[in-house]
Image (cartoon, rainbow, N blue to C red):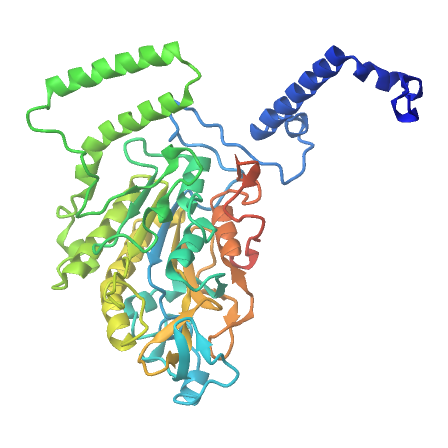
Length: 504
């Protein structure tokens, strides 16, 4: 017998594993222990977490009642905002023609761009182009804003600008995904899903998260912008608008009143009985809760989407009386957004612009050609109703606890495309702004360079932007996570810092 196989050379501890039963028994115990540790970690119940001795990075799991997944929950810490309104301008708004004033563009107008790329997203670059609209000082702060968005320009003293935003992608679908979910790929939870997963909602008669589509249709990435990804299905956004309420919500005229209530009561009894039989079935409880919410929405949705009973001055202020049918419908959507915030809906996402579908800017802000016409059309639809919405929220005191985020997926180049009259995609630097609870009014963070092509200082990634949004809602972006496929997933992936300079 060789030395390696001689039992006399094995330690007493090692010899016990030569017993097959002993070995298998130890393996079963070890596997059970590892499984227990994994389950405790997923639920945030490790001893270190309970004792308060864990790392600051330990995930915080929301305590979700499967019977009422939409119940309001406490944030990680006292946040400035309780609700959020996200206004998403699909197609990429030109920061250089709206909020980011660059005098150098006038100086070099018509010249070849010095030190700038010869080829960009859609091909060769042309000459530097000055803004297509004049810039003027606005408000007491004197912030330079173009005549393309005069109504929003009048509110600049309330805005907190991010002038050095930067994206990782220059394609519309992936950039929409990135802004809405923190990832360029599909299948990840939207920011609204993360927020409602963590916080639930105050209003139990309406969805916790509502996405209001543009009158012309859904954005390029569609439902991924408000999807739940791998979070429980209860936290997916519900998409409807003032002119397109949720489908299949209305009951037939022949099935109303007493007969409907009797049926609902019977279903509730049957569901409760079934739930008693299977008390650990969280999916069943969530499904029951969703049906009960749908029943409540049969009463709440028709009331909240009917904007015609608003006072005449409100309809006029928002632009509902416009001869432009798209603008009129978007104005109604803006009123709907205000009503949802007023009713305590946790997260409202309002879209301006839809999938281009070959429209070259006629359906959104994508302006590779004829930017004077296409951006002009989009601004005519967006500017007045959006400004009226923000003014109305402030007038009603709703901004005291509501954070407003106006954003787009990336910016536009300081030069024209070759043989064209439009600007190409620019993910290097672009502008968005926040307003309301928790942010400094009349403030600008970061700067793009002299041409608005790249970041000069205060670079803000999408991870930083989203981390700041969560912070304002009282959520730690490093601890709001969900265990999926062996990874603690979060909105900001493994990146992101709160931009503390913008906090009021």
